[in-house]
Length: 149
Image (cartoon, rainbow, N blue to C red; front, side, top):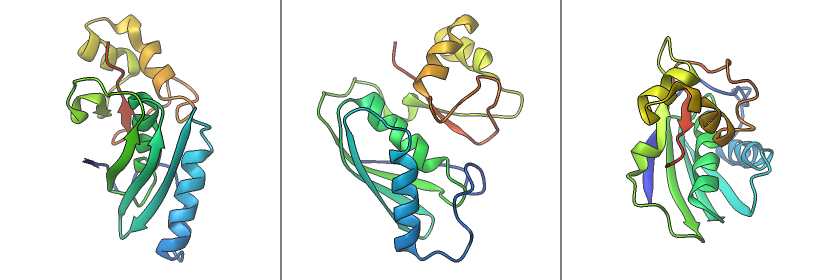
């Protein structure tokens, strides 16, 4: 089990402001499922500004993508991880598997910082599809999955 923090007022605008927590839970679950992550059976429950993910994922990468999709929703500031991974996760701290975009960042700048090579930005882009549709469209506060190499 882990906890990730996100910027509450950044990300996909899925809520109109009058939804109950149960309705928000359904909306975010549908949002995560819309990414069609392989072998992923995850549900989301919302309490306040916290999303709790439960279920199973085939790999740590799939689980991380689901957590990023749920956390990058406007109105969600924390994601609690109750997802079981079928494949043993890599021996890397959870926080090192994510990166929070800062003002002035680009995927190549992030790739240089984490991999030492700016030309490895496609690795980060691919790991964050379909949440990212263009490698040039990232925003401050967004949490990105950083694949372990």
